[in-house]
Image (tube, rainbow, N blue to C red; front, side):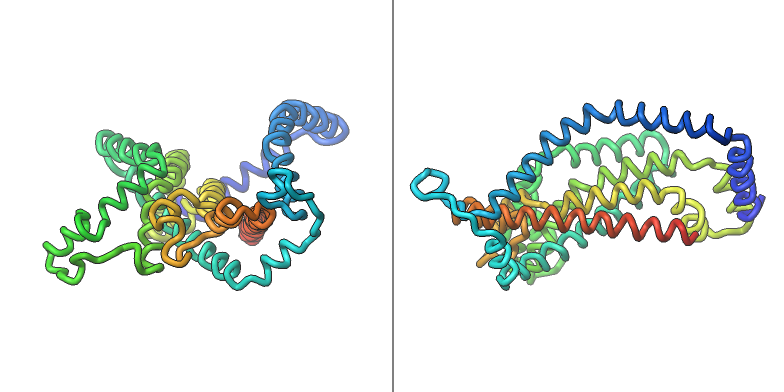
Length: 328
């Protein structure tokens, strides 16, 4: 069976199913009933989401429009409306744009690393025997279950400049320049170190998700591609990847959301943002402005901007993926 034959079979089954489906007013009434039933089932969860997400976001936007510092919190000064002044101050700050650029680059590094490691290990898990696969999943889930603070502290000990295991191993292998090397002094090296910890605790989600998708692919489709003479790379690109695209979209969006709002790893491993704030990301920057500087309004404005950026990135990514599916 060839790739073209497999595609024709799938297209024929879709057309036959469409031809057998009832049409006319009865079908429209059934769809309407199903839609109303779906809304009724989703209503309780929707109300909970409104309570735990929409209302706090409304409060965040409201605080960002006022002068709200420690004096206003304690009642020693009146709360004054400032409109978009906090956002104007934010967008005219060179530090904000530097932190935003660093956050975007750091997020891209972590998302790419998590996807690559997770997908490669998912392929490996689908090809090994039961015992190695079980050990792989236990190790991955152990990394996933490790609290961020504990994982960050372990990485700091491993990469410590004086008694870290990594430096000792590198010196033993002949890299004498690594003796006493600080992994957190240089901002790029520090971002790389934090990125490794983030990837270490994030790839298990991608691994589990993609492994489930790989196991759900019918073996007949892969065998048809193999009999047609397709290479392993061609089979993965033209057969397996399109079937995994929905799961890949979910894993990518989840990774973007998680990594864009990283706080704990950066705060713990760079001691609050690095030397002179050279390793700040938006979440730590918002924390410093809101709590260290007691400028709650500006910190809220940073939070609103982060939420808007995440929504924008998600919408753009989904539209791009939908355009690719329409073009196929």
